[in-house]
Image 1 (cartoon, rainbow, N blue to C red):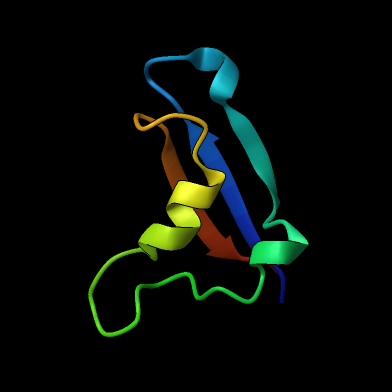
Image 2: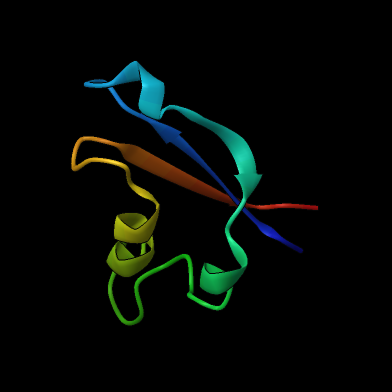
Length: 61
């Protein structure tokens, strides 16, 4: 199952990204932070285009 992500940015609409697979270099990173609640901050920072971008993840079929 591939990992999918989308980006929504309230500050810069051009940063919006439709649902697409997480790039191959980041596929091995877990979606959730190890040992903590919430998303993996390392993966979120890699996919954000600016600090205001909101990244959402799902597992694909």
